[in-house]
Structures are given as C-alpha cells and as structure tokens.
Length: 454
Image (tube, rainbow, N blue to C red; front, side, top):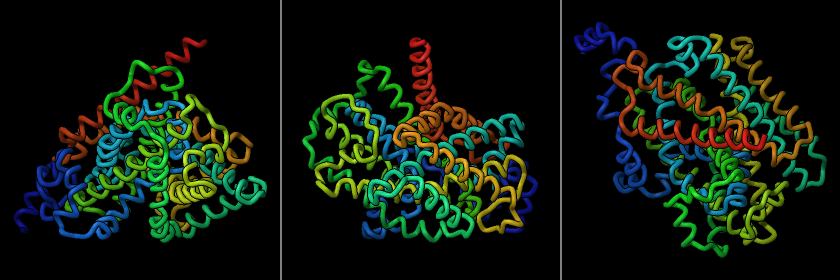
C-alpha cells in the first residue's frame, strides 16, 4: 500500500484530483452510465432485499433535495404551467429527470474530486471574470427567489389567519435568521422530511379529477411542438428555471465538501440523487396534470394562492389547507438553502472563510452575505408585488441565466486538469449538453418573441 501511495504522489493527474488510491475505485466502477444509475435507483430495494420503507428512509437526503427543488416558486410555477399549457408541457416533466440527475451528479463530483466550491474552481481555471459572472447570477436569482418565496408564504399565512402579510414577512425573516445563524436548519430538515408526503396529495387530486388520460399520455411522450405560442414559451422558460435551479447546483457541491465525501461514496450519493429527483419530477408531473384538469376551460392565469389551490379541488374544503401546508413546508426547506448557497458562492469567489459550522467571528463575510440575501429578499417580499406573479417572473429569470451555469459545469467536469480520471462519461455529457441546448433554445425563442412584439 505504501508503494501504491508513493506512486500516486508522482502521478500528476492524481495529484490534481487529490484522491488517494486506497480510497477510490476505477472510473468504470464509480461512474455508472445513465441507464444503470436509473435502474439501480428503481430496483435498489429488490437488490438489497429491503423494505420500501427502509429504502425511502435511506434515500432521505435525496428526497429532501428533490422536495427542496419543489419550493413555493416551483409549486406555483408547475400549477401555472398546467393552467396555461394544459397537458402540452408534460413531456418536460419526464425529460427533466435525467437532466436533473446529470446536472446534480456533475455538481456532486466536483465537490468530491476537487474538494473546492464551483466558483473557486472557475476562478482558478477560467479567470475571475467568469467567477464574478457566475456569482452574480447566483446572487440575483437566489435573492429574487427568496423574496418571491417569502411573499407567497406570507400571503398564505394572511389568508389562513386574516392578519396582514407584512407581519408574516417579519416573522418569517426572524425564523430564517434563527435557523441559519444558530445552525438549526440541519435539525429542522430532518423533520421536514416527514412532510414531503404532503406533495402526494397532488397525485390523489389528479386521480380524482376527470383527466383525459389518453391526451395526457400522448402529450407526455409526443411533444406537441406545433402548438407552441408566446404563452407556452414563456411558461416553459419558467418551468426550466424552477426545475434546473442555480442554487441546487452550488448547494450540491457545497454539501459534498462539508460532509467530506470520498469518491468511494459517490455511487451511493448518485443513487440518492436519482431517487430524490424522481420524487421531485413525479410530483411535478401530477401537479401539472391536476392543474390542467382543474382549469380545463383553457388558458388561465391565476393571481392568488387561493386560486392556485383549485388544482386540489377534489379534496374539497381542505384543498387550500393542504396547498398551504405544502407551500409553507417547501419554503422552510428551500429558503435556508437559497440563502446559504448564496453565502457559500460569494465567499468562494472572494476567498473568504465559510461554513454554517463556523461562528460569525470566524466567517464574517459568509454570514454577512447570507444575511444580506435574506434582507434584500425580505425587502422584495414587502414591496406589495403580486406574490404569484413575483414567483413566476423570478423563475423566468432563473431560466434565462441558467445556461451560463450549465456551460461552466460542463467545462469543469470535462477538464482532466481539474477532474483527473473522473471526467464526464457519455450519459452525463449527453444529458448535460441536452439541458444546455433546451434552456438556450427556449430562451432564444422567448427573446425572438419579445423582439417581434416591439
């Protein structure tokens, strides 16, 4: 073993990767192709001869990540997608699963192999300008999403209690400051895992509605591209922006570093990610179906959370309560992640100390950025914007800026100087490039449509 480690230290590729031989496996063993990863995620309980409950619990972290992807902005955007597009964008729910797996797997592998945050890697290998651009994208997207999410949560609380929304903006702001400054988020997230089954109510609602399943399934597997118009292109960009979220990319890398994951653990992490992303898109699919069936009269752009809750109308008088629990729980999961990922990203860019496990005196810049993102988000939530429109437009912004981050992710994970022997394989590159082309394609169509109107 000593001889092997000595040999390792002389190997320039392995020196860059900084992973000892006795802690890793071969690339073939560690990086499964797409079909095998997806197959293992689905058949894992059978292979391991464990119960479904045990499988679900072991996949907890991935499911929480998937649930965090369905934050208030996501729930509202998917509901609006069904209300506007009907079943015409259901194919995107299916396609988004491998796209999410590829993007999240690349993010995780950077953290495991390089042991550095994405922006630190960008700065060291592609220059400060690209790092500043990426940091600006994350800062803008995260801050606006925080503001829109808090506005939606406050609006829900206002309808439930009758108290002014502004009161709940302040209460929620204090709660999130406490969770992040006292490192309470890790403890809370364990219990928030238990509310993720609330999202299954969308499945129940869709099954109880009068859904033309023949049309729904046809649009799921055969994209009706000829029927695209301005409204569908706009909501498709929002759909992509809330699904392939900038903050999930940076958060995934940070988590791998914080938890000191080794390459030998990445296959288990990939399995958990595949499971969590499947849960996310499974729920997304039925949110769109339920909304399409609930607003079957055609194009419908709702303007309030209570109106959005009509997608759960088969559940009767409890529909708004269930919708409210879903929005509030999703916000508690997602907003601390949004704020913390902003702090990590900016700190990496400027070389500051960072980490929720550090005190304020040890990581002042990190905590100040994190606090500033929350404060600006709270200010946005206090401006009195329509919370539903704010959520949709914040996700359109995500969709417009996301291609830059996907491109940088692909460049990093295909760079042998950074990743050594752990560069992308065929599955990851195929779906990573596809994610880039789809987001760019819809952004271009929306831009052309806007120019025509002017």
